[in-house]
Image 1 (cartoon, rainbow, N blue to C red):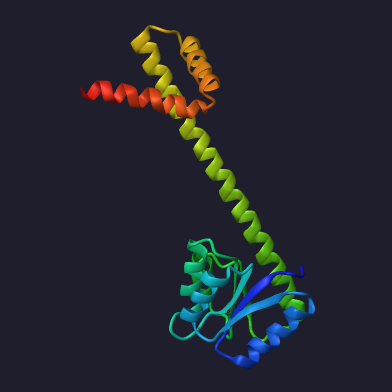
Image 2 (cartoon, rainbow, N blue to C red):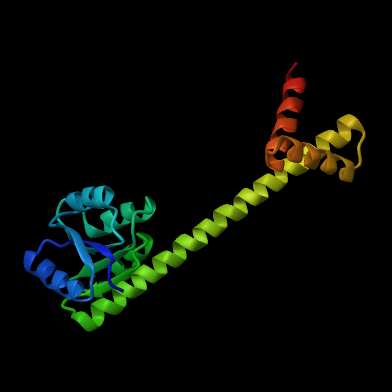
Length: 195
């Protein structure tokens, strides 16, 4: 688990020192410490950590508000800490995309598994989002290719197979993707329709 770059955000300097000592033992590098939410966000943006450990009740901007920004901007996984467990905080943490929640005081035996899970869960989330994006791109490409085939079939009296082979041949000859060929067909058709 060592080697991860971590930013700590907690209003209590002694608490940050304790967490830093625990994480340093396992080889984590603390690349920034903040006592308020605004400073934490600036550090996260500037230093691009692997993990953010942030207190829920930070001054200036709460840890939950900061976690929401970090999650929405896909900056790093967030482990939220709190002095008092409250059900509504858990709901807020879930909505903010927090990867883990720890109630103070906690020790090494609680912190280390939470850190490991937060890092792992975030990596899985990023992987799933990338897969989803690829699938959406494939679907969009398929739609454009189908539209282009339809245009060729209608305007040149071709079968679906002939239209596909025509675009495929253009793709190979021009060394561009089928999607690029299809987009060109659709654009040319739209330009003709506008005249």
